[in-house]
Length: 348
Image 1 (cartoon, rainbow, N blue to C red):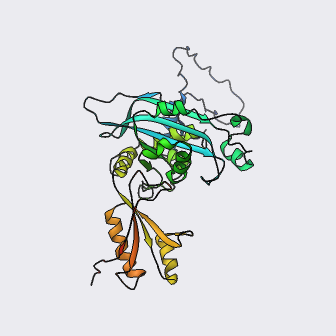
Image 2: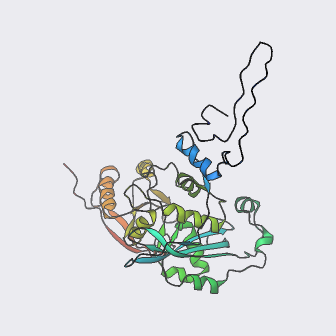
Image 3: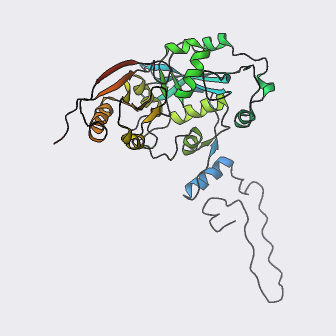
């Protein structure tokens, strides 16, 4: 035990080693007996954790313990019921792979405070994909063939827990949404938000947008890659305040109420591909076009200016803009599409 032990409050540990001496041994005075009532009681694990954190030399992660409920909403509170959703699947392709586990954590959110209120409702179920699971999926998720054999999602229970839900959040909605809508069509008619794509975690000073890393930043650890645990972890992460003082839930709710865009650089010269890629555009091999998601009107206007400067010689070259609302974002369905000239006022 180091010399810092006393500073950290571990005074219940006796670290005295005595003094070394080369002289003849002498009889040490007997220590007075201390009654059990006067002895220092051992510190609790939580007190130890707090002492370590107070030193400034340690960061302690606590195991996530999902609460069965949150404090009730105050009088006059405006709430929206959200479903936090996560899936485990046989693979990455929603057209050919299948859900093997689906979890929902449903809670009301006070839009003013950005915090969950009231009871937490949970659904977690397995489904047999009618095929053997790969060794990779078993290793990643811990789900085995025996666990899913003969299982089916309880659609009645899902319909019950989804009553009153006004929006859906997933940490990678572009992955989860196509799987869920293919299996449960009622999710087509709800707006979705994505805590991975709709929140700028880098601007929040986070080194990674992976859920496990975000949970660790919030001081939590959990058993990842199981759908129910991922849902609870995401809810915990989204209750944290971000740089502007709003919680992640508040920011996502605002995103779900606004339009976003997918801009496609139609006919972009081949020699500009490296610049487009560096800018964040992705190549769509089916449509054979570079495209980029943009969060709002200001980002769209900025991108048009950049394209005029770095990609198109003709500022009136046509571009393709897909207008996406929360009912179509991250789905396999297109939003409203318009093709229009770049038409931007270039600075002198």
